[in-house]
Image 1 (cartoon, rainbow, N blue to C red):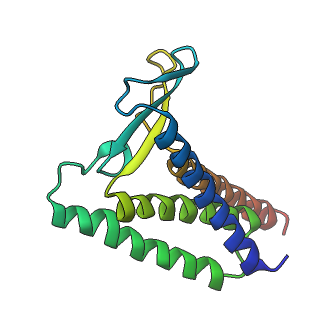
Image 2 (image 1 turned 45 degrees about the vertical axis):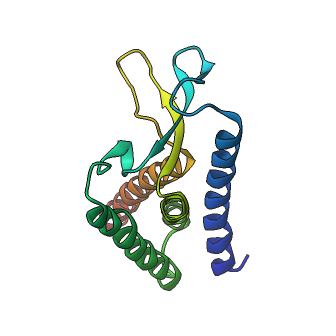
Length: 169
C-alpha cells in the first residue's frame, strides 16, 4: 500500500471511530452522569460529560483567549507539524508511523470538537478500586495515549536494537 495512503487512512480511521462514538453518546445518553451506564460493575462506566478544557478538564477555567491559544491554535500547529514530519520522514519504523497517526487522529478529533461544539465530549470512566482510577475520557484520548505508549516502546526497541548491533561489531 502507498505510504501516504496508509497514513491518511489510519488518521481518518482514528478520527472516524472517535466521532462515531461521540455521536452515539450524544444521541443515546443523558449528560452529566445522571444516566451513567455500568459496563463492568463500577469498574468501567460510561458517563457523558462535556469538557471545555484539555485532558481531564485542565484549562477549563482559563479565559477564552488563552483557551483559544492553548486548546485550538497551538494544538493545530503541532498537529500540522507532526503530519508534515511523518510524511517527510521516510525512515520511520512502522510502529512509530502508526503511533504518530494515532496521536494525530486523536488530536484532530478533539480539536474538531472544540471548533464545532466549543467543548469535547468525554464518556469513558475506569475505577479499579483506588489502585487505578481515570478521569472521564474519550476514544480520541485513548488514541493519543496508545500512540504515546507505542512511540515509547518503539524508542526503547530502536535503542536496544542499536545496542545489540553495536555489541556485535
